[in-house]
Image (cartoon, rainbow, N blue to C red; front, top):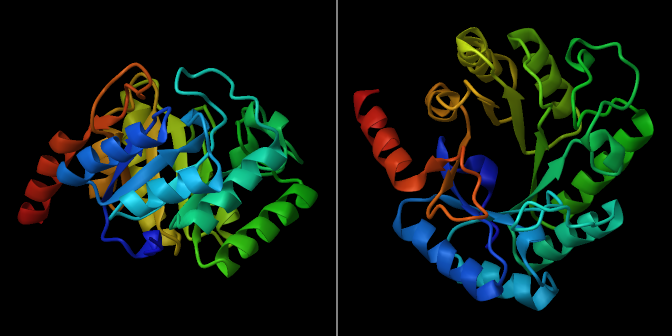
Length: 272
């Protein structure tokens, strides 16, 4: 399955799969399909085995395009312990197995920047020591090479960044434009909202992202006050909504319920 993620009708509902075994992942993909998902978000670091045969079986079982990611967390949210080389290898195996795309995080090739900014602090979006942001040209060059390699293999790249701090509209738009220069097919940014003002700022930001950035963008705010942005921002032009079909121990509890989101989006489309 190699249908382009960037061409899916927005907002596309991504069914999040965080399972330990091949069979459990396949069953959860089926649940997502029947409950309205338009794509699958496969957390490879949760799987006990990610060899090519396991990944190929999972991709083959999905009628939906699969975005493969490796956030280096186990199903129980412990550090999976992968090196950057091992993470990148898992991306390439997933593409070879039939994934439609990979989620390349902003810290790829420099794991320390997963927890803090690397590079020259000369941009609006580097203020406050954001996570997963790199401005060091050597690392960016390696990321561009990986994107080209994935494109050559016929798949796409979603480039993601989770700064872990509140950001205003200008900062997020400038960050997205900075990421866009690496030629990803989709951009994903998740900031933090700690109050209603920051939540409202996220709505304004999504509108501006739609206007200013050519690449499809998925943007929302996490944190104490950010949950509403997970559904409002896609309605305002965000490309993807990440949803849980069955909540369980390994789920991201802040993510939205797939069936509920499907009903909301369908009704919003009727109104609009």
